[in-house]
Amino acid sequence: MSAQIIEFPMHRVRQVRSDKASLVANETSTEVRPSIRIARRLIAWTVLVITAYLLFFGQASAVQPAEANNSALTNSSSKNFTYITVMSGDSLWAIAERYAAGRDPRDFIQDVVALNNLSDTVVTSGMKLAIPRG
Image (tube, rainbow, N blue to C red; front, side):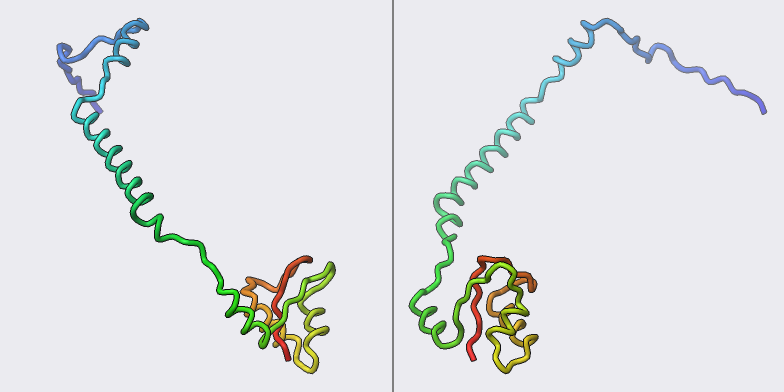
C-alpha cells in the first residue's frame, strides 16, 4: 500500500477564533429575515382569526349539552324497568338472584349491563342501576 498526499487549498480555510467576544457576536448576528418574520406573523394572525370565528360564530354555538326528555323517560321507565341503588358488598350476581325471580341470572346480568351501558360487570356501592321488570 502506498499513501497518497492530497493537497488542500489553504486559502479557503477560515481560522477559528477562541475568544468569547466572537462567540457572542455570532449569536446575536443571526437575525430572522424580514420575510420569515412576516410569514410567522401572518400564520399567527390567521390562526387567531379562525379560532375567534369558530368560537363566536361557528362550531361553538352548535355544541350544546345533551338533555334528556324527562317526561318521555318517566313514561317509558315506569313500564319497563325500575331503579335500585347498589349497596356495599353487592354484585350483579347478587342483584340478579334478588330481582330476577324465575330467570337465568346470566341473562338478567346481560340485560342490566345493556340497559345501563356498562363497560363491564363491576358495580360500586352508591351506583344507581336500572333493573328490568318481570
